Amino acid sequence: MRRTGTYATSTTLGEAVQAFVPLPLPPSEPVLAPASYEAGNRAAELALARLSGVAGLVSSVDWLLYSAVRKEALLTSQIEGTQATLVDLFDEEAGFAIANTDDVEEVSNYLRAFRLVQDNLRDPAGLPISVRLLCDAHRLLLDGVRGSGKQPGELRRSQNWIGGTRPGNAAFVPPPAERVADLLADVERFIHDDSAPALPPLVKIALVHAQFETIHPFLDGNGRIGRLLIAALMEHWRLLPEPLMYLSGYLKRHQSAYYQQLSAIRTQGDWEGWVSFFLEGVVAAASEAESSIVAIASLIAADRRRLLASPKAGPASYRLFEALPMMPRFNVELARQALNTSFPTANAAVKLLEDLGIVSELTGQKKNRSYSYQPYIDLLARW
Image (cartoon, rainbow, N blue to C red; front, side, top):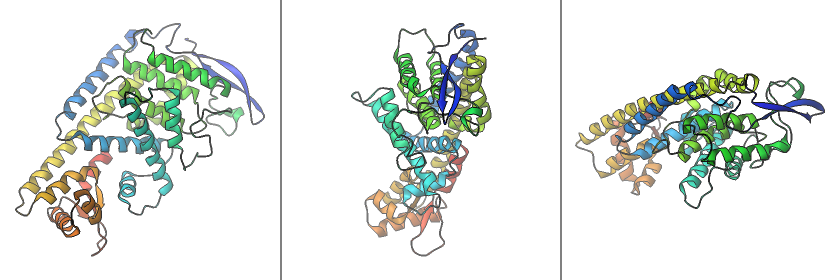
């Protein structure tokens, strides 16, 4: 059996525990055999290529990006126990009243952290994927929400543990705090070392994500930052022209297997099983994204034809319709702002879309009415 780490004695809450210290990447003794991942990697790369082709067929990639990143923010947060829904998130962005504000704020913080990382990677003067960038993202992730008292933006300075009621019966104890910085530096070197043994980018992403989760460098938010790291590495190695594929949906559906495969690396040396699971996830997530994009593009095209066929349609209603995918919950005032027009003009545009059955009114009131592009939201929910 391959050895993937060593154990070090650590003390927390007065208990001595055996903390797992992973060996540096890539796996060795034995090395990761190409035969164990080549077929899965080919299938994953083909799925990404098909997704890229489908994305190139839509009229605007902006609304695809708007949808995809919000769905990822929601699902990665749900894995950690938040109860927010897609409608909650859209309502919060529209300024509508929502009940579970704390959960929605956690999802919104993930969006802020994601944008920070993406902006840095796309800016020639920005930070590369690094410990510093991940700490900056972590600071935004925990800003003002649950976990805000757990050293946001800082590597942990104390021993943590996973599972169990106390350190002594924990399911897993990550490395001692004093080892975290050096272990992350090893991960950073692996990402940027072009002289390392040739491994396909998707395989390297699988290795990095698992290593990050094993190190568990923060007191809170490790899962979300680790999954954000997957998206960041997809961007870093330019595996898609735009970030339209995210794994959190697959990982949420297979959450038990996700944790079991990560654990098997440490307990059985099974890097191959984890990499296969990860590549299967890429195939599934890319295929789901492809199907969803086709369905959403078909819906928007059909609704656009319906609007164009109306003799009452005009510039304001056209422009409002094109804004709907990035403003799926709204009121007349938001429509007015989006169109930069008068309230009566915006109101008339909204009424036409309602009369055509494209949007639906939510409140049943005569004043202060709110609207939803519900078929679009329903498709997103199934993505």
